[in-house]
Length: 227
Image (cartoon, rainbow, N blue to C red):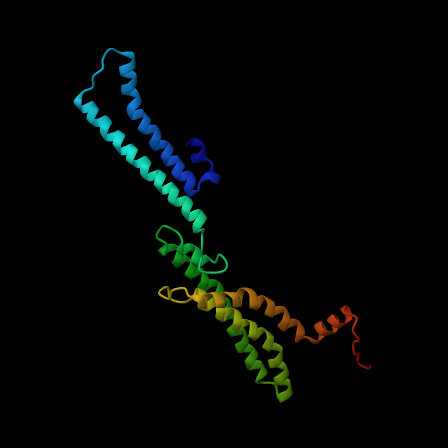
């Protein structure tokens, strides 16, 4: 019991049950042993009514406790083997993992929602402010070709902004009443797999310098400008 209590690596449901069972069985034995020793080492073979009632009460209480604990331990093994830890996602995200907790998760969910607002909305607002100044500057460019080139420079980044922040907002900032569905998995795949793959493609294949360097690496002919 001491090893389980003071070893953090053993703080799992199965060992918690074993700790309680060991304590219960110890008490179960101590209820019987003292009176047994009295009967063995003395000539007195009787017991008072109150002592008998107390012994019977605690004996039955700990016996029943042991029966239910052993049954619960069996159910714990059943869950661990037949129904292992499952989240309605293809990876362990914060919100679905919190929902698996066997306690009141209201405070944790509120803290997580506040954190999501901080890491999603604040950067997004800063991006909007930046593009507000960018648009204001582009509108002052006199030539249409110059405006088109300036907008093209921002197109790659804007694509990633809308994909990443859009998906993240759908998952992290929606009302609590909206239950998880198969659509969540599709959105999660988008911002955890598609977006990271999209970033190098968008930033490299639309960049002339990167495409030129890629051709050199692959040994392909590269066109050079005449001086």
